[in-house]
Length: 323
Image 1 (cartoon, rainbow, N blue to C red):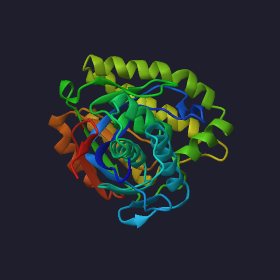
Image 2 (cartoon, helix red, strand yellow):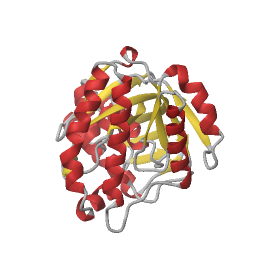
Image 3 (spheres, rainbow, N blue to C red):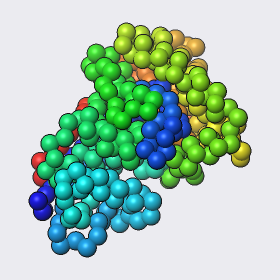
Image 4 (tube, helix red, strand yellow):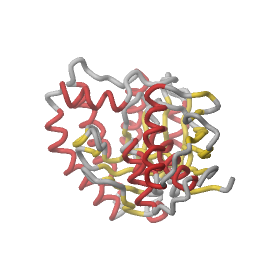
């Protein structure tokens, strides 16, 4: 087959129960289980065209040619698709995010999920969501979760993610308080390796994370927000504690990060229902009941150092779109 084309849309996801660290770096398998929420408002659209006339793969993001390690990860995924489909043609990949890239907002998750889905379609493969999830996971572990909408789990050492609950069954919202603009200083993959190699708290994180994941999963499955929120905050702070104990310390927080955390806690003390989480970046994500989202959004927008607040409902599965 030559000249195949595919286009797909996938949404970013934010882990409620975090993963940090690899059990098998070569196969990109996670050391601990994770559970995420897919976000409707953060989206990547990617197109792939295999073309016999190309002498090498090409990848552009928001119209700019990409090289280096990000390009190598794209080529590795394309190579896996070519091997599966019996193709030799190179591909032209074009991708666009409608939110900041490489800033701790899981752009690699939605990006590689969309790429895996688009490349599979372009190669003529009739892949299931599980197969697309496994393909995406090999490039970015969190991308395995972005193949599904709603609440999604990736078990420790799992090849692909699994849906835990449809978003409509437990309709929460998430506010994303964007603090520092631009790419983060340390990429997640590098940060994980550094934490594993140097932090005395990393073994404690690996030992504790499964029980926190279990608490998050139980709360999601029973739609218990009162149990879910504290477990979500606990997971994020445990993960960052392991990073802070690395040598040298891995600090993703900005001053505005702490301001948002403090405001969310104050909001709870005044009777609001909201809980924060953070990934490997300075931005704060806030899990909130829909009835309280607008009020808290206004409060967060007023904080010094918060450049924008994104508000999102729960997102759908990744999907192919017509050319």
